Amino acid sequence: MALEKFKNSQALSMGVELELQLVSLTDFDLVAASPDMLELLSRNAFPGVVTPEVTESMLEIATSVHSEYGSLVAELCQMRDILIRAADRLNIGIGGGGTHPFQIWSDRRIFKKPRFQEVSVLYGYLTKQFTIFGQHVHIGCTSGDEALFLLHALNRYVPHFIALSASSPFVQGHDTLFNSARLNSVFAFPLSGRAPFFLKWDEFEKHYFEKMEHTGVVKSMKDFYWDIRPKPEYGTIELRVCDTPLTVERAAGLACYLQALCKYLLERNEPPPAEDDYLVYNYNRFQACRFGLDGTIVHPKSYEQMPLREDILTTLRKIQSHADALGANAALEHIYQATHTGSDASFLRNEFAHRGSVEGMVDFSLQKFRQSVL
Image 1: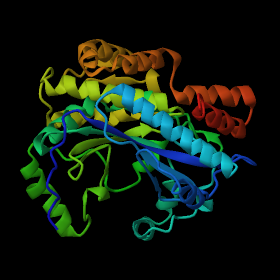
Image 2: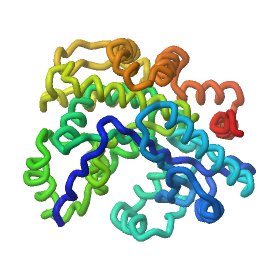
Image 3: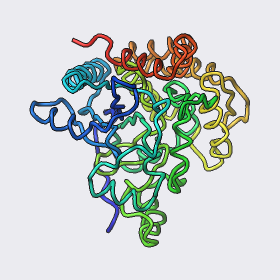
Image 4: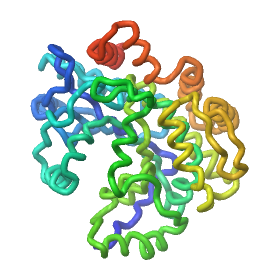
């Protein structure tokens, strides 16, 4: 089957997907409640889309297409409020965070959907270990060539999004010392990591995708778990490295930071991407996962070492005019504040120190998610 034709979308349009935790209010462990939640939510109109995820302790929501911050954050808030009211009826909690801090993967149940069952057969225990929670951001592109340009031009900024969204410091009851431990689970899959270096859509299709399809390893773009991947059926690129934040406001801020950065890059304000940019990619990715905003990264062009937090602040200044044009000032202000107050991972660690238990961390994250619920 040939790769789907790339659908041309409105440039810089955006959409957000969030994978959310379903939590028992008795012991604060994950609970297999997605079938009940989906049935309850189906009774009334829901903005955007809500769907199951690979295990029954997860839900995924996806916004409609937006062009600016105000409408995006408003829809995310509306979705959150509906979800929390439904969860309240079932006496369960719903929240963000890239990992649940003490759930045991073997206790999870695979959702009864053919694709999830197929994935479970192929990947074995890794499928249940994939009970992790991420934010995906789609940015609209006018062509496949533009999508590949953006995908590779963004490579040096991937650590920004890892560090700013980091919310997975604990796994199975222990502090991992990582700010984003979630991505270590993603990296276990054979088709994860970075996309191959192609800048022309027809070359990507003929010299990579068709060969991969011929091997029998892949059937569609869904089989790739790359940090950024093209989505031809939507006409977008999809950034997949973010942990699910503790608040929808942080999720909207990250999406609009990406939108403004893409506008800056599309105007060719930087040297074009090259294969050698990826020499430091895994190192920079590790620094962001391990140390978050306190990490040190290497610039792929100059090889200069720089504090990650300072690189984010420098980037915010250089894309400010682009954010102005997109109506994203509030989003950039949110990101600016995050560089000073810290990531959600630091908040979670502080709560663990304050409350003295991983259950207390979960309770904190549930309360954080439901802030300003109407």
